[in-house]
Length: 152
Image (cartoon, rainbow, N blue to C red):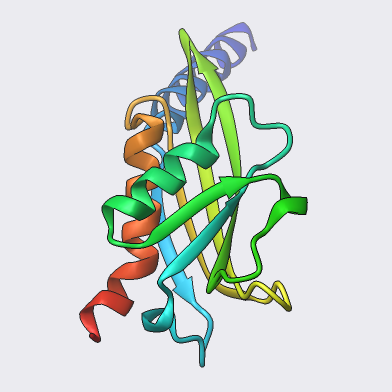
């Protein structure tokens, strides 16, 4: 009986170790444009600051949008300018693995009046595939707007 218990313990330790080692390899990047949404007409995008964000991700998003050729400003939800073609909202999640890193980022491009989501992009990187916040923002926005740029 002791031998069976010892083997079971060894198996559980091995399985646990494999799970722990491979969970840091998580990697996912995707984007979905709502059917009927025309992202090619977007020129001006307002990035709403996610209230709990203390790292300035809103500014990173706005800067990346400008690099991609869009006119972009950022600020609180209550200050959305009237002449915007779209509003970008986001949610970021951070993890600790020796240092803090951005684990997940979701950006939603919305119609300014109705707030209806026109497109959603998502990126998730575990500790072994982690990217800088700037690179995650670039990855998400590129995935969202790539189809729109290819159809122009």
